[in-house]
Image (tube, rainbow, N blue to C red):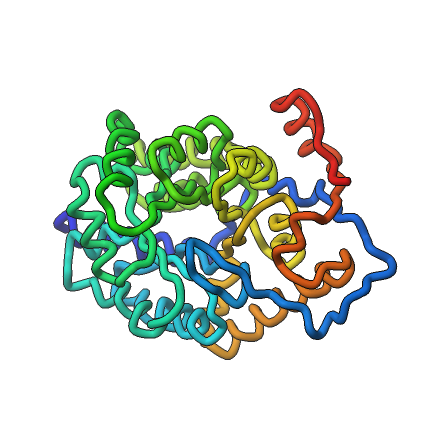
Length: 363
């Protein structure tokens, strides 16, 4: 199998594992966040406004369909369904890593279908920072052009790389490549973690390099260590079985999403909260803590496989949960949620207190 076919095959492996195996690990920290209840809301729940604005684009909801798939012929229909609903509901959407299609243009249609089905909504392209370092802005420009992307997410996945059978263990030069990209690319650059979270210091470095937005990709949802552990266990050879055990050991590694979000929002730039976001209640809590959007991937994957009607129903329920949270906190607009009071308890309180020297509790 040549390299470009191997990359495509790996994408299908990842998709099947996400659908068939238990790949979630840990807690996001949102279970320790409680919003202040408004017992006498002066609002009409049925007329609440979910619209928001992100990187210059008007969206009808802060729900962001996070990067999932693409790069194998069998993934095209899933991306088509996700994009159809994103356009219909005017949601932002991100595609999976475009590496396979940059290596093999025959796979471009598995990503291009997203723009075909969603001509008017916000779409983020996706490329790994290792590929950016190794191939430069040419690959980044091809990823953007492929789907007429409104922004490009550069994903950071070094835990995955460290336990992946064919992973790249060398991160040298990646920051310089990111800094160079922000100076040359004509669309905003988003830095996205993939399950381990981003700290305050790393966010500040990235923003100082010219990055426009941080996507937390925190711990508490899908674990790429566990996903790669499942892959390694299916590959023959003692080395791969050792990698399987490594993946299992590092399933608990990372900064919980709520903690990462708390730190990153201190930097003052646009933020997408992602990593274990599972409900409209989680979205509400993320917005209260300062996120601009909240990204979901795994909860929407199986519904997308089942078709647009199923996906539409799931997203309706998520939006209804968000509306109820707004109603019960007395807020009429998404922009008002950042003024909502909140309490923090448990391990999340301990982590915030240990890092910041004190605990913030909403007024």
